[in-house]
Length: 102
Image 1 (cartoon, rainbow, N blue to C red):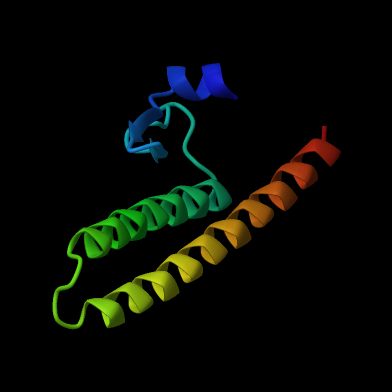
Image 2: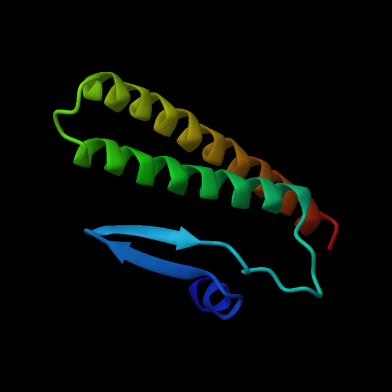
């Protein structure tokens, strides 16, 4: 998938030892995404956004209310990761069904 995804426009950004995946513009106009693929893309973008927000909260250090913001960030990250996991499992099922039809 690495080469194919790279050709399709997926970008990998390395920041401080972390890898972020940009999915913007990664689809071919001739083949629209399925509903499950759209859900995965959307969930991945939300997770990346929440990760960036969490890193910003960490950088804020001892700002008043900072501990509460860190805890809220942890909760949002957990939900976003769970949403991505669910979306990926739905995509697996969609593709398994498609493979059975071949």
